[in-house]
Length: 65
Image (cartoon, rainbow, N blue to C red; front, side, top):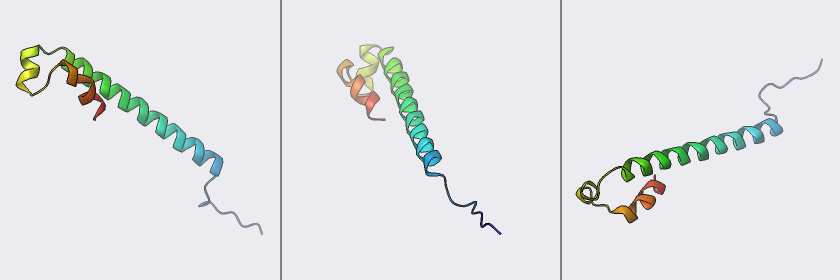
């Protein structure tokens, strides 16, 4: 009788899955940074100053997430 092992992962599928997850994570991070950048850009200079930021800080803050 043949021994069938269900627990053994298919390495081709596992590689594709991990690449897909990494791509999804990168897209999700990009969207989050874009939303943060958009929200901070909508604030006035006075509002940014109230939270301790200026316009030059927006990209740094968005990428730090």
